[in-house]
Image (tube, rainbow, N blue to C red; front, side, top):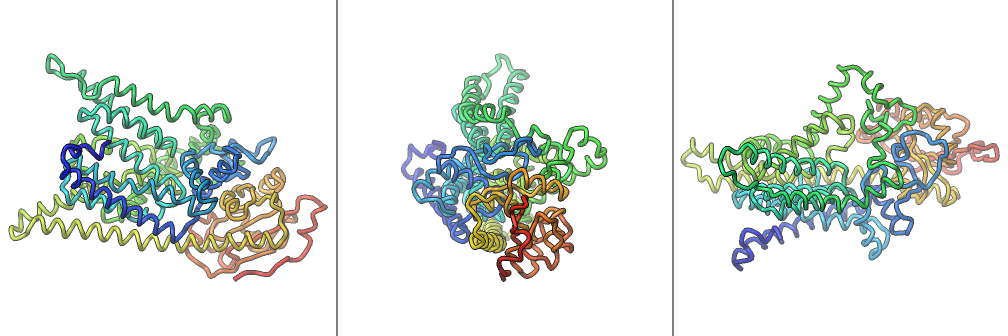
Length: 584
C-alpha cells in the first residue's frame, strides 16, 4: 500500500523508478542476511535459544510449554514449593519470534537454518522500508538509496539479523509504525489507523513495543491539544480524526488480546516476570539470576540515592554507547544527532524523535541495569532506519555548508563521495564485526556440541536434566531439559538441583556464577562428582567478558567441564573416577 503511494500507481515510469530500488534493496538485504545465516545457521545466545526451543515445542504439539528454566523469573523469581518441569513458557519473552519459525519447521524440518530463515526474509523488508520513509520525508535521492543500503547491512548489528530473535521482526514493525504515524500527522488517517496493527505485532515481538504505542498515542494527544488551542475561528478539523485513533487502538487490541488472555489464564498477570521484582527492582544482573536476593521495592530504595542515580546515569551512558557502536558504527552517531537537530521540526520525523526520547528515557530510568546485559540493543535496532536517513542528510548538509566556503566544490559530486564513503565504511564494519562475532559463537558451539557428545557417550538418559548457565542452549544442543545455575551460595544451588532432580552439571569458564568458580577449579562438594569431560582451550579474553567472577580467578581452568550430580546414596557416579579424558 504505502510503497505504491507518491502517485506511483498513476505513472508506469514513476512506478518503475520506485520499484527498482525497492526490489534491489530487498534483494541486497536478503543476500546479506543469508550470508550471515550460512556462516552461522544456529541460535547463539540465551534469547535465541529460548525462541527456538519454544518453536520446537509448538512444532511438536506441546504448545507453549518448555522443559527448562532459563532464569527463575519465568516461575516467579523464587524456588517454588512444588518444583515442576515442564513449565508454561513466555512468562517474560513475547511469542512472535517463536511463532514465525513453526511453518518453516513444518516444511524444512527442525534445524538451525529453518529457524533463521524467516528472520532473513522478514528482516530484509527494513531496507526498502527505509527507502520509502526517506522518499516520503523528501530526502534527496542519494540519501534514500544510501539509507536503504545502510539498513541492508546495519553496521555491527547486521550479524544479529538472522538470529532467531526479535531483531528482524522488531525493526521493520517499529519503523513502519512510526512512518505510518508520521503520515497520519500529515492527514493520512488510514495510515494512522493501520499503525495500530504494526504496534500490536511489535509488542507481540517484544514487550518494549508498548513504548511505540505510547509514542503513537501521544501523536494523537498532541494533535488534539494543538486543535483545542487553535486561535483560528472557525477551527479546522483535527489532522487525525477520532475514528482513526479508535481503529488504531482497536487493531492493537485485536492483535494483543488473545495473548494477554492467555497470560491472564496461565499466570494471572499481563506481565508475569515483572511481578516478582526481578525485572524492575534489581540492583545488579546477579539479582536477576538469583532465587534468594531481596528484590523488593524497599530493598531497591535502600541502596541509597547516590547508587540509584549512578546506576541510572550508567544505564543511559551504556545505551548511548551500545547504540553508537552497534547501529552507528561510532562515526555515524554524531551525524545522527546533527540530522535530528536539522529535522527537529519535521513532521516526518516527529514520531521517531518522540519514540527515541521515550526509549532512551525508559532505558535510563526503568531498565538501566538490563541495558549493559543486551536488552537495549534489541530495541535500538528499530531506530536504525530513521537514524540512517538523518545521518546521511547531515552528511549532505555538511557538504553544502563547506561548499559555500569552497566555491570550487561540486556539491553533487562531493555529496556522492562522502555519502558513499559513509555507507562503504559502515558496511565494512558489518563484515569485520560480524565475522568476529561469528567466530566467537562458533567456539561456544564447539564446546556445547562436545558436551552433547560426552553426555551421549556417558549413557545419559534422554530424560536426564542438566544444570548450566544457559539451560535453553543446552536444551537445544543436548535435547535435555534442566535449569539455570542460580547466582546464589552453593547450598542454594544444591537445593535447586535436588528440587529439579538434576543429574548433570555443566560449567563454562566464559560465564560462571561465583559459587561455581571453585568447583571448576577442582574444589567440589560431595554431591558433585569428578568431571567426566573437560575441554581445555587456550585462554581467550572474549571468554571472560560475561564472567561474573573476576577473569583472573578462572585463568587456567577448563573452558568447559561436565560433572555428574549425585543426590542419592544409590547414585555411585560421584564416587568413581572420570569416565573419559579431556578434549582439546
